[in-house]
Image 1 (cartoon, rainbow, N blue to C red):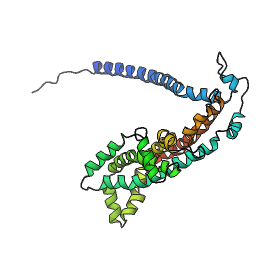
Image 2 (image 1 turned 90 degrees about the vertical axis):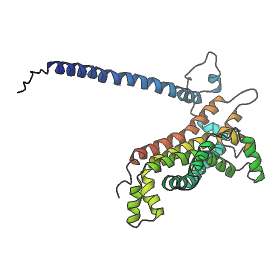
Image 3 (image 1 turned 120 degrees about the horizontal axis):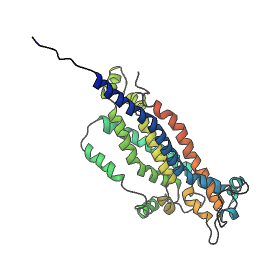
Length: 299
């Protein structure tokens, strides 16, 4: 006959109370610390843009004033009007930047989407070598290949054209787009594609109606990376684009600096205008990013 020893739950209850009390303290203190840290990080990253915004609303004398002043006496919004009639003609650079960035992004999506889908869904000889080659090409930068690209475009009679910059930006961003989208395609179960094929869908329909909605976050990542990279590209554009009316903003912006003076108010104003399209792109795509995580999962 076994005898049950009396047990008590008091030590366990005391331990639970202490654990809950300590967790409660952490829950109360962590949000405050995280909030303070978030505000500091936000201030560090936003401060340069605020200084640039304030500088765009000053006169040239206020910008070069010693000691410097952070706020001008008046807000000169006229800088955003008069900068378009300056000798630099930033409107030409803005149009060139938009055309190059948009068409380079479209080109990358058209090429990277089927390539990423095929490498994720099918096996073929040299698949590992192909993916390794894609990863290696990501290490190459336009700065290193600027001279070679100039000679290549010269041979193709594409020098000093937007087509040249579209091809170059598309080529340098293609590797990342294929690699990131391939990972998203590979994360989608093959059973979903097989079920769609059994229901009579073709491979093209499976790609566009089933797989693409499921990998929308990967597509968004590729769009953002390609667009921002093409928008900010400078090295190749400074070598290939020689005409002032065809140069993107990254190349035409330094023309505000003269030999003896610089129109800083215009530099800041044009920079603010150049940032806005990227901010708008993020605002538009951010709404669709979370929705793309589950979109298309239900037939």
